[in-house]
Image 1 (cartoon, rainbow, N blue to C red):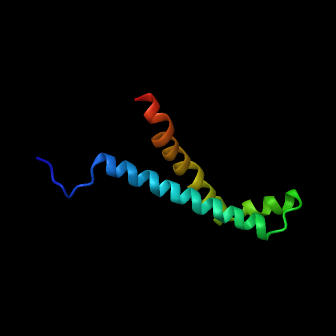
Image 2 (tube, rainbow, N blue to C red; image 1 turned 90 degrees about the vertical axis):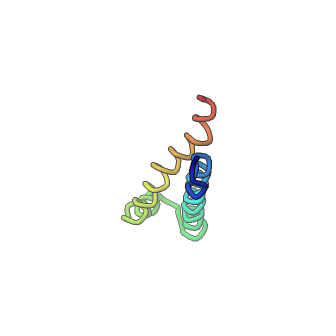
Image 3 (cartoon, helix red, strand yellow; image 1 turned 180 degrees about the vertical axis):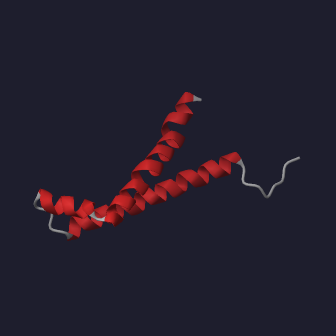
Length: 81
């Protein structure tokens, strides 16, 4: 018998996908807020936005785990199996 209190594989996968989707939504809203409130009319302003340490960390947090985990769980893994 298994314990009912443990998080099962399906529940864990569900939570991982939802947390990654939330991270992607938050980053997208952050980037959209910059695009709508900032004056981005040249490359120098766009480049200076991504030069800050905060934006580098946020971009890595968005790109590496969120897209890879979200893409694997929703896209590639169900097709492969």
